[in-house]
Length: 377
Image (tube, rainbow, N blue to C red; front, side):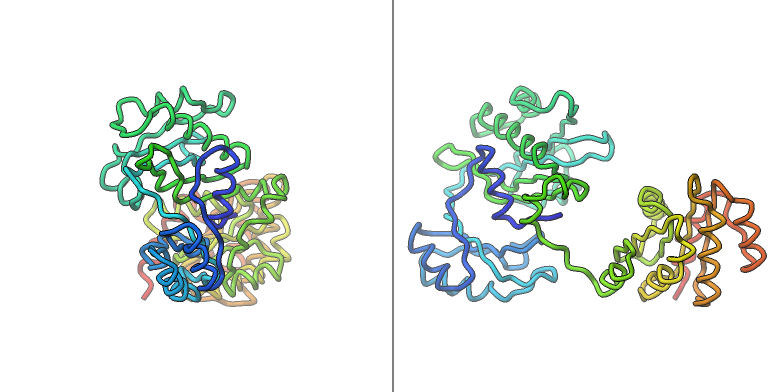
């Protein structure tokens, strides 16, 4: 679950990380009044989308008149599909230099990763691609945590203009925000050193781990409800956990973990998954609406069906998909991978009713689906 910038910054402030003086506004008049109160400001669209600056949704204003004009320009814009309805009017900082700081979930170490760069304020993905050494990283053992001493170790050898101890303590506080609020991501870019020597978070991205929403109910109430596509809304109405993606290889698998693994293998083979959609042991009742949903995406050019049975029987799940296939009669290429309980019966059904053989492994099925999608017009 994502959060708007001003909500994310309240978490930083509560942890003792400085943020600029700011006011919310939903009209040009309110924006002008805020600038009249505290002077030159940055006017920032409050939407759950990145690269707002490149979209022209973050602009400076030196006086109330300019603030009103800028606010009128930004309000009503659409940024990455999100309409701008609220603005953050933020006192402009006198910046000496800018840093990048973040704590993220690291899939490689299966734990938190603290990141820092003395080249903040720019597109961090582009920086990482251009110069990976420009970003320092430190894996965190959640049993030990991350304190100011760890921050100093991370900063060792980096050229810094500011107080090293102050920066190390800020990194430790950022980690506490991540830990205490069950975050997937807490990112500050830029973390600015002002001419007065203060470290100030000029922007913040905060993403809550969806699995912690019930535990963080009060915090989650401030989160941004995801904008669902037409197919995602249709899936939700049918009780299906469907997420539409921009690829061309459709996915049907049982269980969230196997579905995610299938998607990762698609990417590994140079393809792009078209969806996340898990169906489990009740596939015999869900298979038809699930398959219909996947096929309704016009980008889908091939399909991989990946079943692994332990408690759920693969012959039951496969039978449900075969029923759906015979009902809908799609013409796109499909590739099966079947492992686990009931496999022999599942394979027999597939051969008898559809004249198909499953691939010997998930990797083979996925590779075939990626290649087939690439060959489709």
